[in-house]
Length: 314
Image 1 (cartoon, rainbow, N blue to C red):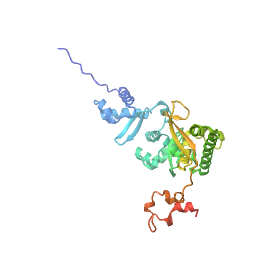
Image 2: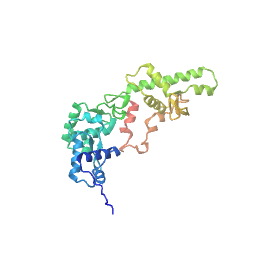
Image 3: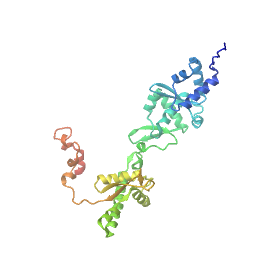
Image 4: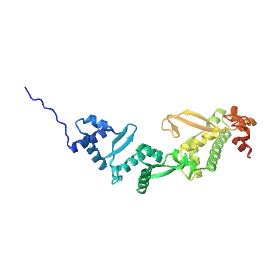
């Protein structure tokens, strides 16, 4: 009868480390200690801990924390070089900030995700800032709070407010100038169409302009100190639509056509109201969303209405 050979699992530290790294590559979002236990049930807890700690100290693994506990994730070579000499707590905070992307993360959320004391987090944040690994950015959503993100990232528009904000202040005059110039361009296009003396349908169609044409016109004017995107111009055009000065139509367009998105193109044209709006529509009460709840002596009343005060300029 032939002898049955039982495969003996390796307990060599190098083999254990290589197997843990292989698991991390297999699961790029991270592995838990339970995953390692299930893959290598023959290992004792101390052997497993020694291998993980060595990989962490060499900067080959990232230590993360989620709702289910600790996660281990393979670290890319570039990040490993940046964090050389940092302790595990500093690496953990850096990883939490990196995961937040260009929207950044508040120190309170860093504390929640890392489970570190606030004093320790503040110390680590100052250290990472001094190394130019991260930066603090003021958010327009909360003027007294800062969000942290990686040093080389461009903050998201939701953080900076985009082109409409400068040092957290809304540039109302700049927005008004853009409103006027966009409307002027559409009006001039409509006038050229009317002067062409073609049939009404052709005149109407030629009075439309896509957002790319309006964007190009604004860029050529040179009235903006910041680079405006097509999305910025469409935001301005939307405000003109709400004001009743511009109308929008959407047509089908070939893929790759300038100004088209997903086979569709937005076209805008300036319009003049046939009749002036009535006084009730001009007054805040005519468009007030809480009109039914407004009464004298109530929480919402004409005497303390901020919209009425603005309209009357008092």
